[in-house]
Image 1 (cartoon, one colour):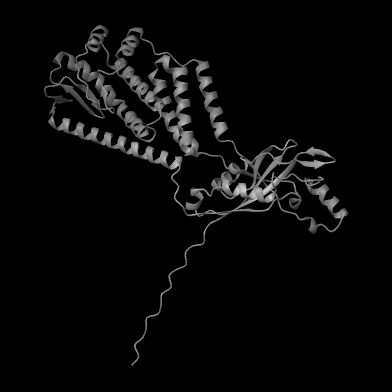
Image 2 (cartoon, one colour; image 1 turned 90 degrees about the horizontal axis):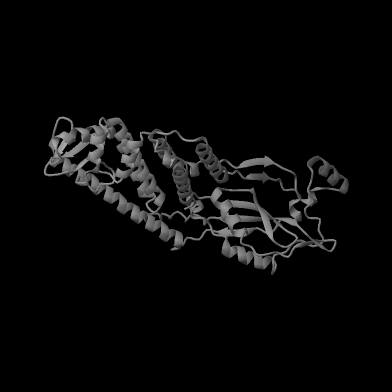
Amino acid sequence: MPYFIELNLYLLIIGLCYQFGFKKLQNFKFGRPFLLLGTTASFLLPLLKTEKLAAASEYILQDSYIMEVVTVHAVQEVSFGFQLIATAILILVAAICLTKTFIGFIKLLKLKSKSIKEKDFYLIPDSKRAFSFLNNIFIGEQIPEQKRNLIYAHELVHSKKAHSLDILFIQLVKIVVWHNPVIYFIESNLKELHEFEADQISIKEETTYIDLLLQQNFENFNLSFIHQFNSNHIKNRIMRIQMKNNRKPSKPAVLFTIGLLIGSIAISQSAELIKQEPIINLSELSNITELGKLSELSKINLKGEVDKKAEYPGGQAAMMKFLGKEIVYPKVAKNEKSEGTVYTSFVVGADGVCKDFKIKKGVSEALDQAAIHALKKMPKWIPAVKDGKNVAMELTIPVKFVLPPPPPAPSIAPKPTKEN
């Protein structure tokens, strides 16, 4: 689900960049690769997470502030929460969209079998349709022959430029993110750019071509993955033909887009520095002199030097009860058989507010995030006290995730032997 949310956010960014940066340019040489590469990147960027950095850090007297271990057991249970329901709806509608697309292909094949194969295209009996898909061009029999050449030249550009592959790709994306209106915006603009390119290359006589576009007596074939000569972009196509422009992207638009994309990626891919700090017990230090030497060499941070440590409201038992309810064993970790102890740290400020949550030593992305997510829900603590004043104090809570033991292998009883 987090991947799915991030995917949709990237698609939204691509749509906004095109709408406010490049749409008015009507430049198919730039717009087409931008929309295709941007859509592809939306699926890939959430997967390209930077590896968490590990660094040797200062020695810390862990037993001066380490808390009791919180143990979380994986429970085999079925949850019908919001995420499960939302996922089921997404999959169900995606299956319906896939089925609808498959039915569309069957309709197209049936129409092809009924059409008359001419030298360069298929002639549809008793029809005014005109469209293309991949290398197949279909022209209705009722369209006058003098107009067929113009239509054929236009649809031939779609075929040679492989525009259908773009639309098939967008169809697959629509099946996955059917709920996101941005993908329909991308599809519409991509088809419009296809028509601009086909018009520019195929047009020979402007007036005749515009007259052909204005004739609204063409029949449409209701399939979303084909290019129809009588598209929904007639007005924009005519305006573009008359303007005869193919403007280049302006520098501000390009810089705005690059800045927005880099900023989004930087936020998403931000690495978290994990300090793997060795545990040192006070009992291991024989005297004050040895402690002083180690302090100079390793820069020991005596975080426990307070008169009264920070305390969860209600005490240790109340904290254990709270975390026991809030920490949930992630299903991903269960499936991956991931378990272990996550060392989480945070600072209880002088005002009792918990902040600066970190993973000191993690196990896996899922388990780390489950621990941090629960700790961030904690209420205000009773702050630590030093010399009669409230002070900030850093605490570490180990969260131990434990999987249930595997079921014992069935014992095979020896077969009874017959006594002679």
